[in-house]
Image (cartoon, rainbow, N blue to C red; front, side, top):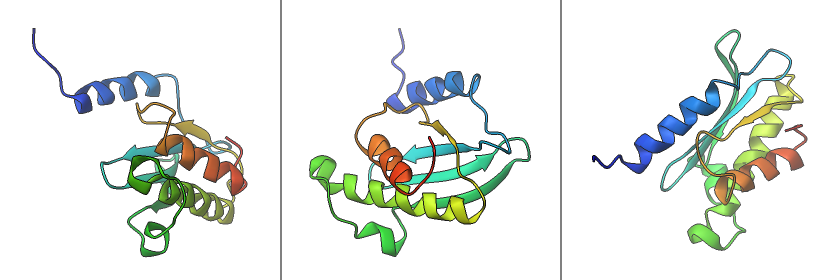
Length: 124
């Protein structure tokens, strides 16, 4: 038996999820990627292949967000990324999205980002 890496297993889960999940013009896809230090999110219209809005915790304004004690204080920046993404998506004319959690569990930073996007006014 060969052991697969956690990332390979996550990618396989993501492919399986994407078989039934696609962003349309009316309801684009909110795609989430989580690294060990940062979290990235973008709103993608899969019918045209365009990214409508994006945000990440690498941005100076969002990296210093506080709140959330778990995961070495990474929940606060994830929440801030969700709020910022919601504002940018609304500016691009998007009010509803479908969440693509990227093969990650809906827990921790992914959940915090989704809640921030809801607070920012996106319909998930």
